[in-house]
Every structure is written in structure tokens, then in C-alpha cells.
Image (cartoon, rainbow over all chains, first blue to last red):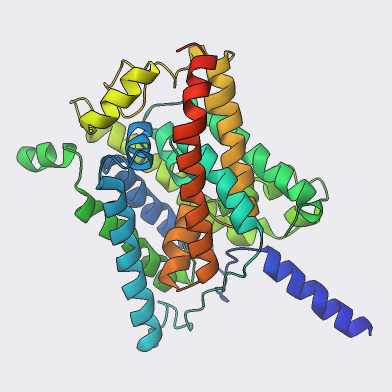
Length: 165
Length: 193
């Protein structure tokens, strides 16, 4: 009885966690530097493709340019092909682990929360990634938006059990 | 070299930027078995700074430190672009968008963001309240409730053929359309445009 309760509890926690670190081996500080480098390259692409621009997001939601749809569409296509190739040929990570991607379980949050995020996306001109790049490129007041986004995340966490899911 | 730099300073086309963003997915998977996702970083910041014994934030955030390094990198990428690769020309958005935004009261199309909105002077005004405080809150609350953002759901999730991620993406877009076409005109006049 007690055992099954524990198992249920662990499963619940796993489900709550969206993108857990799957890697089994430990990573030290130097190991983490590679993510800083990838992030930096990513931030440059974000900035130079103007995805971080409030104007571009407006253009997208007004269906007045193919640009953002081209960016997101081709990103998905390359991601999709990569993931399918990794699975098909059982490509291992650098340290030889089997690549494992957590599944996304359906919940009402994807509808309600997704809609709420969409409202914020069009208002701020940013999803979470571009918030960081906007601050970096010089719109430092966006740090306030970021703090407010952290607060929003915290408030969700505080009331997560009481919201429909 | 100078020519290359000049070339890189121009806005990058979607067919260059999109695939590069897509390559982040296999890069993170193969470098360290990491699933691409950015909004989780906001959760880790909560877990690190103000967990307040809330179960949702009670986990070993240090194990997820890679994600914080990743977003720190994004910020650094913005800094480097600002210093070395910034585009001197005004943003080249479509004339229809320019027309629509002019009608809403925007007149400065110089940079990546409208300077009439995104400045510190606006922080304690209605503009700041809506565009920074409420906007940011909606982004943070919404992404966590949805369990991911454009990167975690739209790119990583759909790449892994997860239908809940497609549902989430559809509602991201619906939210964006609703804000842009129904609410933004009201907000713009309310904040004094």
C-alpha cells in the first residue's frame, strides 16, 4: 500500500516536471560552459533574425509577412528531421548515453495556459528566450518584464494544485 | 573580413535563422541529453531564489543549472550582437504592419522595439504596467501552466511528434491573435497612445 503510494507520488512529480535533465553522468562547471556557448550562438541568431523584435511579432500576428512563419516552420522541420534521425539510427550522446526525450502529456493547461501565454507574447513581443536577448541587446527595461515573468511562474507554482488541469 | 562583418550586420533571412534554431534541438540532445526548452529557466530561478516550500519548486535546481547557463548565453548573444553586429538601418517590417501600428499611435520604427514603449521612463506609467508588468506576468504564468513555450512545445515537442505540443502551439497563436486584434487597440488607447 505504502509502496504504491510512493510510486504514484514519484510519477506525479515527474509529470509535473516538464524538461528534466535526463543525463545520468555528473557535469561540472566546465561541462556547463558548452551550454553557455550554445546559448550565446542561439542568442545571436535570435537577435540577427529579429525574432526578438516586438515589430516582427506584430507582423506575425497580423499575418502580414511570412518571415516568422518561415523561421518557426523551418526550425521545426530541421528539429523534426534531427530527432527522427537520432531515433532511427539510435545515435548516442557524446558520453555514449541513449538519447531520451520526455513525453508531453496532455493537460488543460496547454489550452488555458497556452492562450494566456499567447496574450503575453503579443503584448511583450517576446517569448521567454527573446526576453533574455532583448535585455542583452540593450532594452534593459525588459529586465522588469523578466522579473514579472518569474513572478508569474511563481504564482502558477503556488496555485498549481488549485487550477484545472 | 570587413565585408563579411557588413554582411552579418544585415538582418538574417528566415531560411538561415530557422534551420540554425532547429539545429539547437540535436545539439542539446547529443551534447548532454538535454531537451530544448527555455521557459523552464524561469521555474529554476524560482526554485533557486524563492522556493518557499512550494512542492512545485522543491527539486534540485542545481541539476538543471545547464538551462540557466543556456539562457545566460542567450543574454550574452544579445550583448555581442548589440556591440558587434547591430543593424544601423530601421527595421524593415511590412508596410501593412507599419500602417496598422501607425494607426495605433506608434511613430518610431528605428530599432527592434518601439522606443515609445520599451524605456525606463515608462516603468511607472500605464505603459509600463501593461507592457512590462502584466505582459511579463502573462508570459511566465502562461508558459508554466502550459508546460512549455515556443521552444519547448512548438519546436522541441512538435519535433518529437507530441500532439499536446501542437495543441499548445495552436493556443499560443490564438492568444496572440486575440491580443493583437481585440485587446491591443484598447490597451494602446488606455495607456495614452
